Image (cartoon, rainbow, N blue to C red):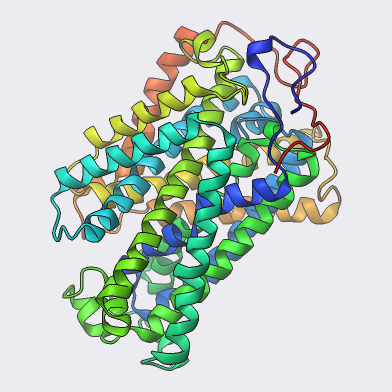
Length: 485
């Protein structure tokens, strides 16, 4: 398997992922099961069946971002994605804070997915109404298992990702087809229900804006293909394709499965009133029975676990990318790779600690807080490199790579910036109805991260450092014939 031709032996990655691996990795990160079932209940209960339209609108905006990221990845296909792109576009300080924010957003996403998966594990085990303490303990076990799997090598990641795709086919597409064919309770006209705003409703609470805000969670993580760029063969071409293809694949599954569940939901009024805590499970139990539902819950657990594994792989690479350039405390320890697969084991172990820390500060309304910050946090982080690209274009410093290098790429990148600004405001805007710290979670957490980050950077960074691709930096791995899947 290929290694870098230059740089310290302990700091060279192996190119063991192909285009298919990168697509699968990003697909598992987003995971239609996680993307849909995390926000389905809140979307259906708050907006009604019409919340489905949030998905295609969000997909259109996120595709602009994916294509813009593709331009950046084709120019700089380096481990760490958002961090690497931002620092090259604007400067070291700007890039460092982008990477710092990205690390914590991904860590909080790990905690959110682990906690969401814990709920399904509890249901499979027959534990109804599990306490928050019980769910946190189950989530920590899932985090520990994912950490073990990530440290065992890329073959374990590929195996779990393969199981995830199989679970998606059965648990989302297969069941969706079955529900549409044999258990439809409503016609397509129901998709307009809930979209009409009451005369006295505030602008921020217009149903379609709420739907787009909730759907914002569903199409995150496609950029993870860029976080493993130095482990992908021919990344200049493979990574941009992987981001776009994985986003389209996830979106197709999510929109199809959500449509099937909405049309099979027996009683929307009960969901809106809060009488049905989990409309997905309740609908499956009514239409398919307890035994089939329990099997499906096992598939949901696989989907959540695979997503957790992929998120952890991504954040560990971001940590490793900063450590390689001496921009984190204990960088010399963090950047060392382990085993024949040359895995960033130490960075992986740190991700377990960061995700576990999140639970200690999440508060009593833990799941809503995690989801609120993760969704808003991703859009803030995405804005760093897209704003950086706008600045580079204005300064006349942008030199495109092979992907979308013409006028179309320019138009897409400006449209992506507009989308990110609008969607970020839409997601983080305080709407009330929850505890104040949930409403203001993104503002509070980012303020704390900025202060802590400034302290960490001041104590750690000692001037400019060589970056991958520079003559003095560790080189990039070169694929050998037969390497990969």
